[in-house]
Length: 375
Image 1 (tube, rainbow, N blue to C red):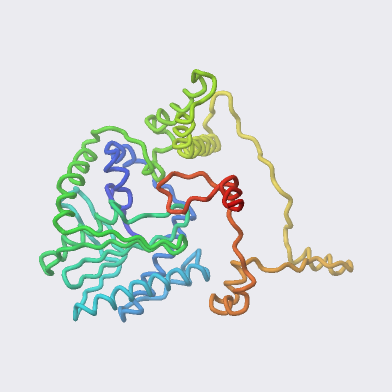
Image 2: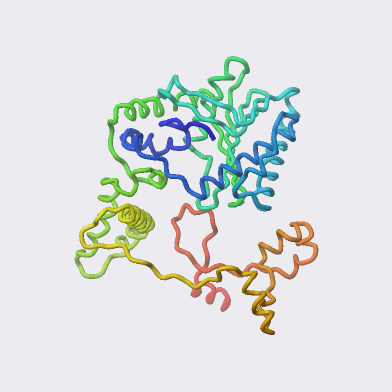
C-alpha cells in the first residue's frame, strides 16, 4: 500500500475535526489488524481486475493474498463491473473518457505533506468521478460530505483541472458487503471553497498542534483513542446520571443516554484492551493482574483423531447441512437461486433501537400491529 501521509485522506475526518490529534498520533506506531490486511488484499484484487478489463498492464496478485476467498473475488468483480458501467455511461456523452486506476494524488497547496491514492478516477464531459472501494462490513460509509472523498477529488483536480474543463465532481463509495453504493456531488468551485475555508485552516492547526480536542465518530480509528483524556471526559460524563434527582430518569435523560451509550461501550472496551496489552508487556496496573482466561478443549490433529475413532468402530463425523452463505459459495449465486430460491426465507430481525437518521424503516411495535389487525 505504500507510505501514508500524516494528514492523509483516510484520517481526514479526525484531524479536520480534532486538529491536535494529528501531532498527538504522529509518533504513535501504526496498529495493524487482520481487517486492515483483508482490505488491502481486496483492493489489490480490485486493481488487478479493473486494469485487466481496461487492457492495462497488471499481474495477478491472488497467490500473494492472505485473505483471498470466493467472497472477495465476487466483491472485486462487482466493483470492476460497476466502474465499467460508469465508463460505459460516460462514453455516451464523451468520445474518450479518461480512466485512472490507483492514481497517486497530492494536495500540497492546501495541506502540507498531503498525498494519497485514489482507487479510480473517471474524467468525462466536464465531470470528474471519484470511485472508492470499501471492503469493510462493520460501518456503512456515506459519500455525502465525506472528507476523504473530497480530498481525493481535490488531488485529482490538482492534476487534471488544467487539462480538462471540469466543472462538476461526483464521488462514489462502493461497499459491496454492506450492499451500499453512496454517491455525492459537488461543483468544482464549491470543492475549492471547502478546501480554502475548511481543509486548509484545519491543516495549519494540525501542523501547529493547536485547536480543540473534539470527540466524535472519527475517534474510532484514532491511535490515541485508548488514552485520550477528552474522550474519557466525554464518556465519563454519563456517570453523572447515577446521581440524577429525582430518583427516576426522565424520558429526555434516557434518550440522552441512548445517544451516548454506544460510544461509552466502545471507549470502555478500547481502554480494557489497551490495559491488557500493556499488562501482557509487563506493566503493573494498581489492583489488577493478568490471569489465564477460560479455554476450550480442542483436537491436536483432526485427521488422526478421525482415523483412531474409525478404527475403534465408531463414526467420527456428523452429517450437517451447509449454512446459506457456504451453500451459495458452493453453488454460485445463479444456480443457488435456481435450485433453492423458493426454499430460503429471511425471518424478521430482532428489534434494535437506533438513531432516527438510520436508513432502515421504522418497525411497528407489537401494540401497533395488534391495533392494525383489529381494524
